[in-house]
Length: 285
Image (tube, rainbow, N blue to C red; front, side, top):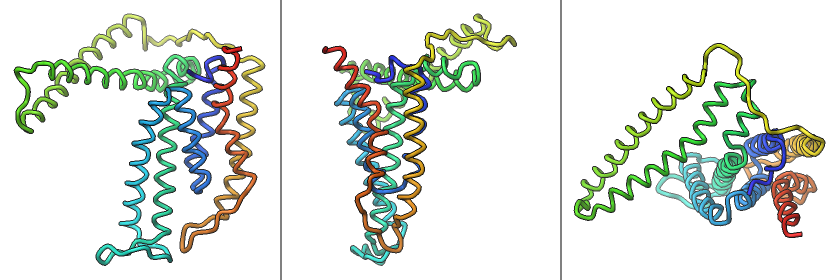
């Protein structure tokens, strides 16, 4: 369920743009933890709990890899935890790696929710006139990448169903996967030629200014929600600047203290959950 489905696409774009920008800019343990929690909650509301749990698995793996890499390649800090040969592992480097990995995972999770809420049609309705080429490219990528993955699974399932030609060695299995890639490449090139002919037949890039079919009207409810999201994003930008300026990883970790600014950030992240809960309440009423 898309919590922004009943609103203008500009509302969803304003929310995700603000949240993703803050998630990338605020390298602070509390802000990163809130961002990851909000992204998982939004993903569960938009795509379901199973998808959110699967995303949590690869997000945790990503955080662990980034943290380990930072510990191994950055020998900075004042609290030594252990030594691996001549390399010392410091608590500050581990904390920085965990926060940096959490920031990266949170941004990727927010982009996953963005792709679910802002499909190709919404992107064309919002940016089709101002940025036609970029919007068309982004909308096609958002459609073709999942299609490519589905086709790959279909081809692999058909190939695996031929039990008489089942691979017996690792080399044969690798050759089979390369065959799947070859089929997908040919299939994709054929679709590209058909798609380009269809676009040319419909007058794409003929020199005339393109028009778009707009289903959306920017009403009072859209303006009110957009204003609230923008106000919260601007307030959180100032609050995050203050919080990040008072926290240091090196040479020693700063102490985390309770602060009311975290609640304002949590309120911004909870916007899609509030809209989702309101929609469910209206349907069950």
